[in-house]
Image (cartoon, rainbow, N blue to C red; front, side, top):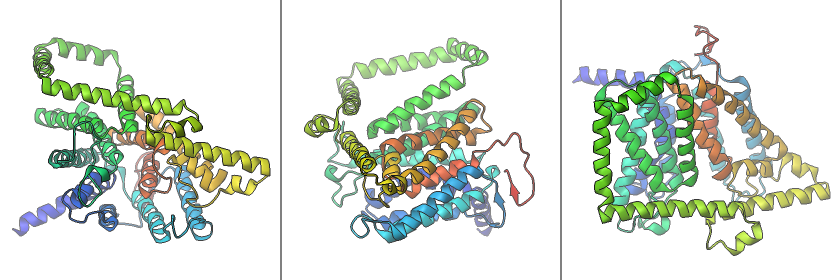
Length: 451
């Protein structure tokens, strides 16, 4: 008995950083399934926080005196943001008490700073061979839990956005945030696609492919248009970056072989059967109509002025239209500040969480001014430059996954949430930690090392 426990403990200790960090970034759907799906702690933010912090602490370095080199400028931008955010929260938070919950915001910043320390104490050698596997497993389990919940929920009807309800009754009127599940599914898709190309074992390839197809379905069911778009962009860039004459020849040779012919026949038969089944054909047509309608609404919103948006919100995407109105208000206030010479508000902003915009880039400029926006923009430029190199000349599967994973955060920094979320900044810091040129600098045994 003790032998098995010792073996289990050693295995967990070996992979704990991959397990903890993959759950921290991709395990939120599982937490919400336990919390609200199984109703273990309905609507409890403390329950969510405990799982998030625990998964992060699992990855805590056993030798905290040894820190690995990060992207120095990128990490400096993260530190500058934390200093500004805490300073503003202490002295320049105009909505404190009714919109800004100071203890929660302090906890957000402390989690972020702790995460930065843990990332700096984590070697890439501890993650590069296992992080993708654990990420795919956790994201797939999250997708399965969402499917289970929606199937069991009598209030769910096909065509609604799939998410686990935050409400006590589990009704559709209080459905949760579908972006959470779609982003986790996207993360699993990236991990699965990258693993699939290097995996040689047939059963593992079949399992990976099944997981990827399931997670693609989850992205579609969630109808989070930003994630639908970024998933399409990922597949396009991945295809473009891997085009080689030799790969094309091998692919065509495989497709024209007996295995490709058998797969084609099976897929053709399945497609023909589903198309001739009125029940499934109706589902497919409804799904296509819904996605097309939502995309049309969003596009219409971006080409409509704010006054018109307010009048036609009932016929266009409400979330996108509200975002346009908020952004318009920000630039209206900027114009007034310039006219009135209020340069303090332009340079230093209107204060911590002064106005919710639902576009982190714009809200960062409004709340923290040119200073905060410059930090945010500089950090993105640093990471995007590294991503461009990494996609076309990857160091390893782990760093390639980070490059594609950041694209989702980059998209959401224009279209979703607030700039102060610890999850958002932990993602930025995690990518910045490994945004290095590993091929030019060898791994060394000194306390500050690129590894």
